Length: 481
Ligand code: MTE
Ligand code: MO
Image: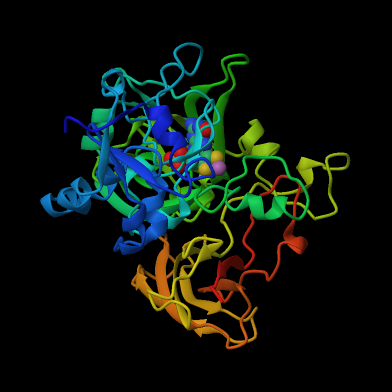
């Protein structure tokens, strides 16, 4: 559109939100610049979701929420146009690129929708307000937890080694072998990082680790060969092994140490364990960040054992001896500190405990009179438990836990007994207390199939490494007087 003012990308960022922006929200689409401030409260998906794009391009959001890219939506947008992107900047890629040099230079491009914690290695989470938008998390916005540079693997020369004292016939499988010699099996499973919700522990006392909020969790439909089938094909000696090692191709550029871990042999071999050597994520090749061409899927087990870029599977009497199995990803008493911690005294985390999380409204958001939100509030979220236990109930309270409302499970309720690998999505409306103040606390807690419940507060589960943070989730909303 000629005749409109031109803005650089930096200016657009500056003018959007914050004090300098004077509370306005600008976004770009194509070459256009749009002031969407007055549209925020009209957005059918709620102001908090559209606000994620503030100061940046809409395309990456529309790539994951494809229902937006319609004539009608583009027309609404065009009415809000205030300018054009400066010509010199029009071809800037709307992805997050890796560094130009160094060990991380061949990392892939990523969607700017991801909330980045560290660039090298790349660690980024799904914005929590988007978590419960889809039962299967779109690949582009699935959280990424990398310890090392992403290995770039040639699918032609790729081999998966299956070996160890516990197999009679070691195998060296190509990607094609894996796809054609073993039945294809599909599992919908949630993966969660041991450190998800670590920030909540940090508020008690500082912990070491990436300060994940609630978005280091995601659900996908994974397809591949069953780990059990492959181990049986290799003539596994079931009674001779205790552990199955899973080692990745990614390695430390300085020490050469590879990422790896192990799982109990009983889990790997169980016909109802559903462990996969997966080559597809949500119906496409596993993307580079998530383990192309093959990753282990160990449903119900902490993210750390779902080893990506899988190089080898080793059947063994012993647990894997690498750093991430033996000296990390373990839980300790709140009184254990870095001076007295002895990692050999605690078992490696495998199955994760029950958790739940309110994804909407966003923490500290303001409820509006116009949307009828000030007498009751609609909450939405996710809940999940490890070990296939599944979630049987989610309770929500607007009065600090004196009274509870049981939420409706809106997706994922129907999962097999003891094989409920995926989260549930839930929703409920809760009346707000009569005598409410300006700021109201909303909490949720889930109950799993074993009737395990979440702890009420974070203090008693605090641990120096910030793992296993699963207390009642608490958010605050503001109600205008
Ligand atoms: N596998 C390899 N090879 N290297 C890694 O750094 N990170 C682990 C696990 N598998 C990791 C890995 C951790 S800690 C988690 S939480 C999950 O992968 C994250 O999987 P995602 O990046 O696909 O979400
Ligand atoms: Mo993790």
